[in-house]
Length: 284
Image (tube, rainbow, N blue to C red; front, side):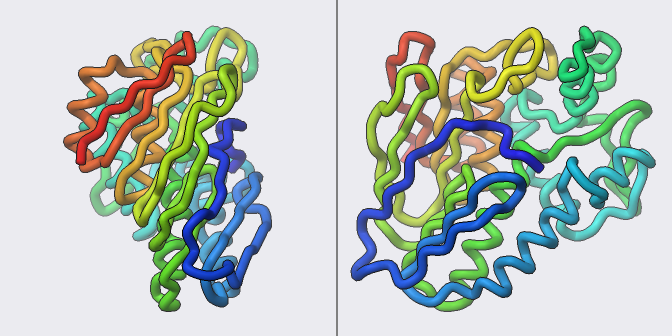
């Protein structure tokens, strides 16, 4: 699973009560992972969890997800079902702007096709979850828009179970214990726009300019929507929900974003338009 964006929310830990006792850097999901804590981090448990998440959601290797896509049906692990339930929550709140069944369209465009056939296969509401998980004919899923957030949430939970009082997990999406942490908001075209404080909770950012496909952005509108914002940054309790919401909000007008953010229990949304102007939707 490669990070779907090259945009960075520039992280700088600001408010550890003392020096950070652990600063770990590594790789996960084809991208950099940084974990900063105020005590010894349980790295064996964290690395085991990362391996389990990659085994569930990777599109770049044999995984539970690639087997589901190939066969169209699978029992579905508890982890897969939990992430699909979160995806369904964001799908409903965003009026279907977040739709993991865009994977065939992504593949078609990446290979230089026009995507007309693939677009007709989109529809997360056609997914059936019962005894088995069943895709509609021709469908395939990508969970790259939520799985990294899920991973950040899971690593945070492991750190919390260890008794850590301050931790910042950075894997493109951020999850925090304690804080405050000072995070810089950067747009690929405009540059650094400002700083935000994160105490607990999570933050995720999406930008359509971070990666391009033939004919447009990597953030694909399931009904042909085009990006309306240069960058969207979302803060809320869970990194998985922030991750998925930031992707969808790129495609949505401000009034719809405000309604969806409230429905998802988010804390704030920062929107950067094409001119580089920033506006904030504060919900708490």
